Image (cartoon, rainbow, N blue to C red; front, top):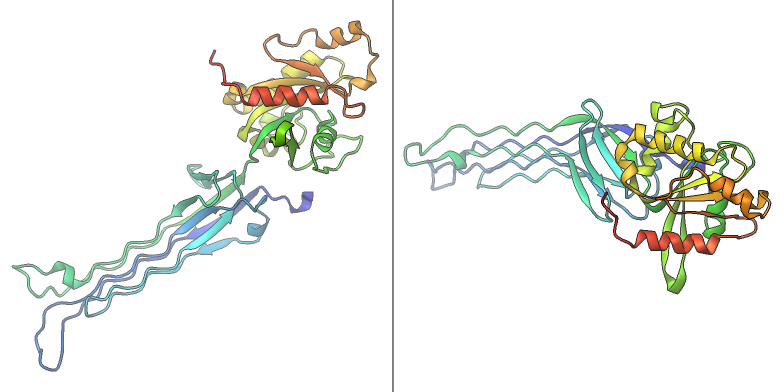
Length: 337
């Protein structure tokens, strides 16, 4: 997916439809000069609805849609005829989309399944016709209910990428290269920071026709949790990943310190991210001499409770073992500390 076409944030003004007014009507026919009330109810206004569509991967189609308005309900009529319901306005969005009220920050709903629907703004109720108000003591009510007004709000739609594995690391850690090796995804790769500006998804084939989805999250920088660079845009995509794979390049000056910095950025942004299962892969191991002492230096200081291994996308070292470790970790119950 091209970076210019990957839109993961839009803000729209939405309004649900007004409800139709109830009818004030009395039965009048050729031989019935003083019939009773027969005014029908008004129809409800149209809802503004969010619907999941597994074929969509971005909010691009809503980028220039600033105003959404559902149809009003129809008015009631004589003969107890109800007004038509207003047509709903349905916004199809990719899985992983979260809707929030732009003013209050309240979460209105999130879409995780294909075809799932969330009513963002309900339409106004239809007014009751005068037929509804007749009683033994009031046989000819001369009033009907107006329709309820629709709701209006500015709504923010944010896309959080859904994937089994999220690659976490500083820019140029080798995340895009790894994704290109283990899947059919073809992210842009170059030897400079911030080659990746949007998440890339790849389906990783595993043994016996099994598979899992891996997401190349754009590189984190120190201070990302405070909004430095494009940090907040990058970090929100990590929230929806089941497993976090930290990539630390073998030419890092201090792998343990780099891991702690990455971990701290996740902690500052959302402490619950630390509850996710974690793996550490020391990438670009082909740049280091193949000696046990050199490799042990890279491992020193890394946490004992987080599995780690060496990989190279160039020589393929450790790639199959990494797939095995990911699959095993994804399919084992999460331990509660």
